[in-house]
Length: 112
Image (cartoon, rainbow, N blue to C red; front, side, top):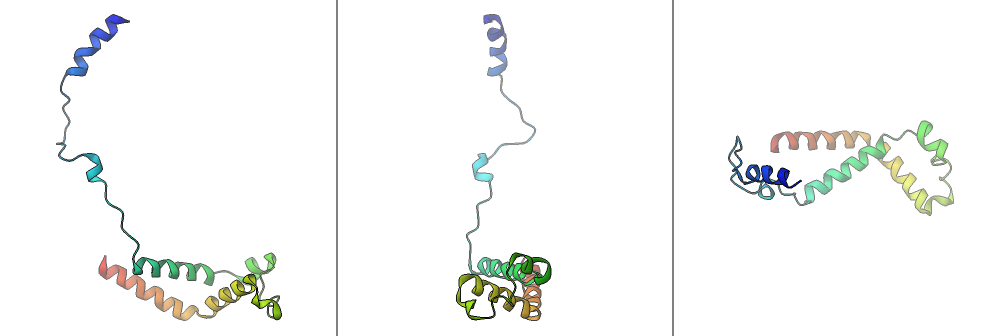
């Protein structure tokens, strides 16, 4: 066991050559995280509105008991009723949502 350690020791003391120069520590080369600004927050709300707008009543909402016809009465004041109203409002406003998506895409293409 001692002979193995003695023979490896000169290899560990030899200088290491790398094919590229190391100028900075690795932690300095890691990109910094961006802080969330107003634009990022608006993008998040737009993605949420897109997600709510594509929900289909027949295939997704009605089998789970989230149909608008069930909550059109006096139960629309509950949280579930308010959420269903929000889903139907985003589905009703699909054309402005398409325009907002187009504006966001154009701004992202121009700004990078």
